[in-house]
Each structure stands twice: as C-alpha cells, then as structure tokens.
Image (cartoon, rainbow, N blue to C red; front, side, top):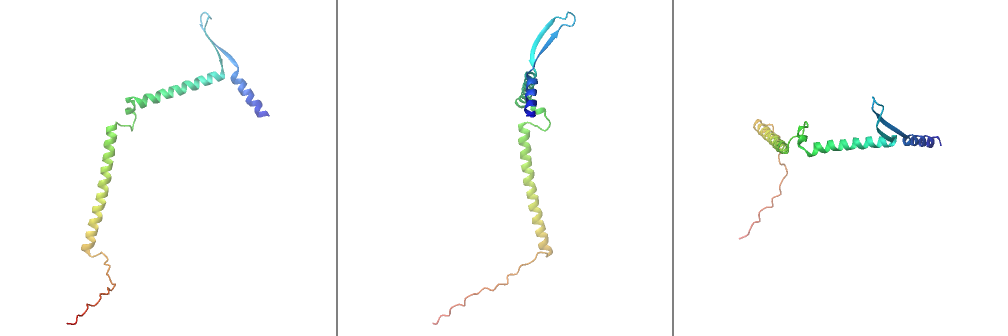
Length: 132
C-alpha cells in the first residue's frame, strides 16, 4: 500500500502547476508568463532532444558531410578497396600453391618422398590354349 502512495505522490508532483514569469529588471514589468507543470517540461525537453538528434543524424546521413567522418570514404574508394582485397586474397592463395609445388619438387629431387609400393597381386587368367 505504501508503494502506491509513493507513486501517487510522484504523479501528483509531476502535475503540480507552476508559473514562470520573465520580468524586465529595470521596470519590473512582466514580459512573458508561462503556466507549466513538471510533466510538460519533461515531455518538451525529451521531444526537443529527440528532434535535435534526428536532425543531426539525417544531416549527416543524407548530405556529403558523411565523407568527413573518419573511416567513411566515397563509394568509389570503397569499391576499389574491395577489389584490392579480393586481388590480395587471390594472390595469397597462388603464393601458397606455388610454395607447396616447389616444396614437393624439392622433396622429390632430394628423395624424401615416401614411396608407396603396390604389393597386391593381380590374378591374371591364363591364356586359353587352342588345339589346332
């Protein structure tokens, strides 16, 4: 029961009305008067924050300002980098194949290749003799 009383008091505090008056310091004349409550101020500040963040993000995403962000290049540079990465990967695999080939050639010439002898016997049928 105590928790619901706290929630009610918090909600009541958010809905209390306040008056914000802007006055001229020399003449004490009221220039502007606002009637506010804490909830409306909170909602207004959150809305302004979301709108500013949205405008900033859209300004960066939809304009050429995005090219000034470190690590973000133009589309042509990105495409060229991808092509260079693909070429480097293919060259790396070709170098590995060449190294394996030359290692095999070196092993064959030095006699280090183990030879697997075929020791199974093949049953060859005897040739039929013809009687003539």
